[in-house]
Image (cartoon, rainbow, N blue to C red; front, side, top):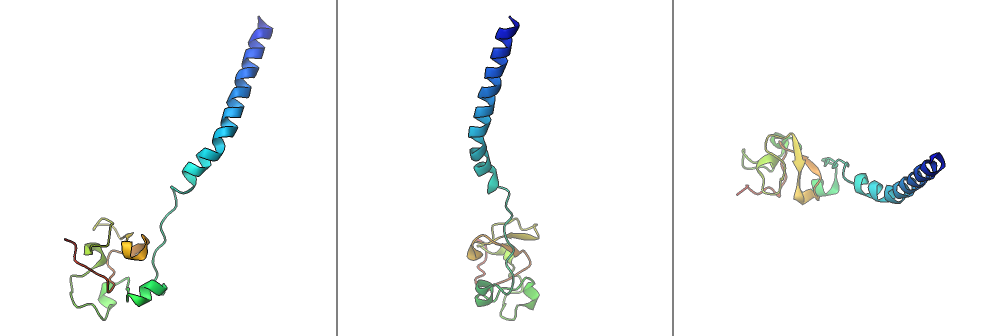
Length: 108
């Protein structure tokens, strides 16, 4: 009986090991991209320069509406209470909620 139980345990161990080795690449693929943080847009980024993006809207010389901020822009998808949020104009990169660029459109 002991020899039979040892064979069963060995087979079980081999099955679990093979299953774990086969599943490892799939687990890596699932977890590798999900925890990445989005990059913050810098004012020196070529797109930011072209759109006159400023992290502090009060420093934007071309801003005409004093209430215009990234946080109330149609392209900003973060929460208005967040310090930073993704912007579709910049490919989902993070922008300052208190920022501004020439693509600003009031949220409907």
